[in-house]
Amino acid sequence: HAYCLVNGQKAKYVGNICMDVALIDVTDIPCKEGDSVEIFGEHLPVTTLSDVLGTIPYELLTGVSNRVKKVYVMD
Image (cartoon, rainbow, N blue to C red; front, side, top):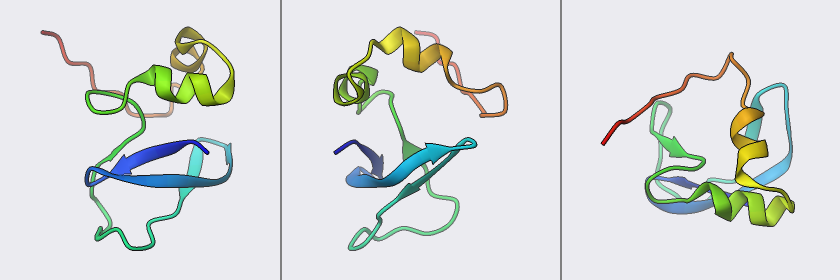
């Protein structure tokens, strides 16, 4: 029942995340290749995903592979 945000709309994950790839259902969400997807961030706290997975945010954040592009924002 986990989801990410595509153009600000909830898109449910389909299946398991494997090899740094996540499949999401974008049915009825207007989107195109290159649009941003928020897995966790400003509009979707990491705790939302960690609660669904039954873990803590630290485990998710440290489990993100080095192959995944990261953007750090300092306030």
